[in-house]
Length: 152
Image (cartoon, rainbow, N blue to C red):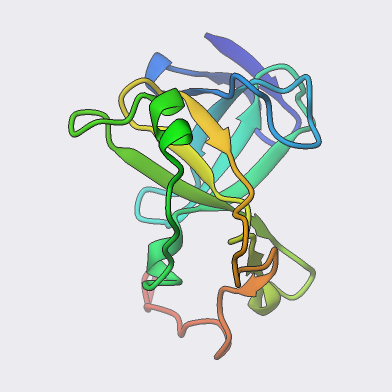
């Protein structure tokens, strides 16, 4: 499938990159289909690019590399709607906010995106009675030091 993106130009998307939100994303009622695009091969970041709106793309990341203790109880109705089982594992992502200063990047831990890794069906939920917020700093101690790759 071929899609247009303001950020990436025209892209060929495989079926395995397609993510479907039956209820759309909160705040975007028309947006139900996205492509999950890796930022770089070993990066924790991904782009969630709308298939219908070239200007709409979110930076997302799996939280556990940044927040190892991140956890919440998954409602049985949400698990059933996603069709989760031992064979259909859950992937968890959080939307990342990137301000001018990269060291101030934050993750929305209050509203995770849940994806059935087999069916690619997704839901964004808002956690109730949670201590999480929409702005948890990814790098509270500052950006990590360079790894020295790329010419050093």
